[in-house]
Image (cartoon, rainbow, N blue to C red; front, top):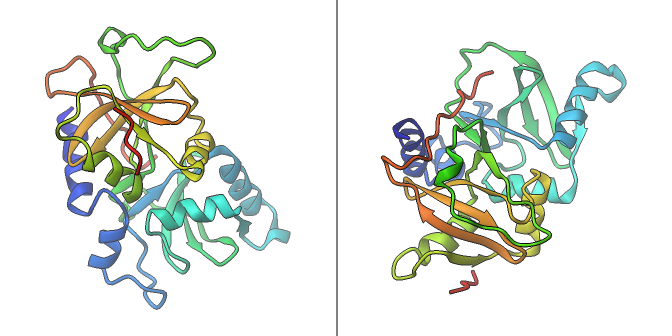
Length: 236
């Protein structure tokens, strides 16, 4: 738990998003310094990147849909920024373009300077008995072994209403935000961990948004060990 909180605290120092690290580095279209970030694309984009690497005719270019571009924008990853992404057990260096991505290097050394992994951090050890009963017909009630680091808009919705409301707390999501969850395979009824203000929370996706179930305390049986980056309803 401390491991995750240390990472989360570092990210929260940088607003738990890419926005402040970018500002702090004075990153711009004229600065080729990569963001210290390994961005986890969904399976569809991952496959596109693989095909572009192995097919010379694609000239290392990958097209992204409007939704995929929107997701990057919401996390502060602007056109012209370079960053890392995992591909087949290695890290590729890519640049965001007007139409998608340009693959700059298909493989970079493991010692490359990324510090964070977003928006999904996978493989957390969870004790199922620590999860509350959340059974509703027609929903997928499995707990996902991941933490989703929300973008500023969703994080802001949660932060504004953490005080004074009893759990479970319902947070409405827009259609775009719901589609973001879909892209990463998070279905209605799934629960997972998120971090807000350096604190970990157990969250469940609902048909209208998110249900913040409880705060995960330091000594609670939900234990998180992130893999290294290498390898009441409230409307917003």
